[in-house]
Image: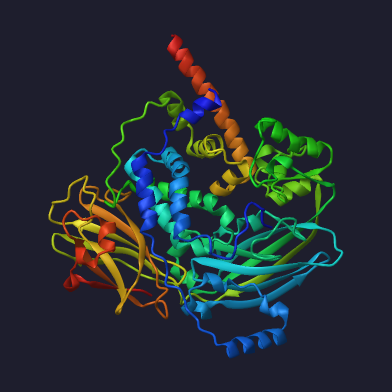
Length: 425
Length: 172
């Protein structure tokens, strides 16, 4: 098969589907901007204060932009520092809602020091339980970065922010998450042993072979660089391509080698040596911030019952999952509409929903009679994570689509008398 | 740390509603191909794509480097597709489902790609069909680049092998 055959194998996106995606994008709701009025005198006073507090402090990189303003007090100031012969590093602050950690760091190269490649690695533990983590943003840092930096850093020179999410399985054990989470940041500092060269075909930020060479010939460049004892960087500063093309060391099995991390492969190749390894540990607050529904709650409705299977509220993101079990036998196997939709409230505050999805035949469900609904909501308008959330069912005017009803309250029929609370602990 | 593709003016300034509309328009093809690689029905693909877009919108403030937006969006989409595949999910009636006729594309090649294991299939779609560099495929699939290269190599072999079998079967 030729590449052209392969490219013809998948049809273009249907116009209707593209249109629906665009329409979805048009229904997205912007958050209300936070308006702050500052008088000239106050601005002047702040400037003086900043100047006296020192420029470094005023430029301190923080996670606060990622946190709803009402939950700014959940940010943990860490101010943990580390220095070696090549750079100084500070872990400025972090925030965790029990599902996710966001961490702000700053690196400063030492004057006159050699340029080194730094690989951070993050692990987490709560009590005796090792938590599985996954980088959701900031993985470019986990892929290794140079100090001093080689490429432009959009976050500002030396600034780095990581988002780590905990795997879902870890939420099962709520008790563990309620304890402090201890995070360990390991920094592997690699010193290059060979001269550094730059790949011209990725200098624009993407692979542009320009028809001059094939992909295989491009790969060969990395193998050649290794043979010539050179380090060939892609995208201006990246070693991932190079690491991926290094040969398996003699005496090592392939499967063993491919389980090694990139930094280990770079060291095994001889192109780099590990000049320093450091660990810094910090804890984030116990998670009174993460509240979950526990157990099972069945709410009888007319012709069906709602089974609450999961509600999880945290200030960086919240979600719920319900089963709609039809008891009147009227559910059609291909029924694509839920019996009712739900508005979530905490006391009188409506918790904005950014969307939900809907199944009618999931794994472990009674396919004949059960539908499943899962959605996400925000508690950014609340002062704290609520102990109780009220689900208010509503239906739509006949023939109306859900997104139309979301823009027009007159198309929604609320069943206040059927609202039910769900307690969170 | 950063890869100098395009500069941004400040955190979150580019990830506004207009940007998402542009993404929905320009990246629908990539999203659809990935969804095609994981889900059989257009209804489910549409649901996955919309869910992914909504989730990305919801979490957009957590993405520090907007240059990685597409990679990140595809990661979210893959998770959505897997959730839907796991749960046998169907669409919420937000839109009328597309009633497009089956296009006359090379279904033999498509069948061959569909027979690949999911991991290889995704690598093939992103790398060969969408032209993503291995690095970005690796980031989207959360695996080392060497793994992507390995999967692509296996896929190349498998596609050739399958084709040979088909040809052999046709000849007989």
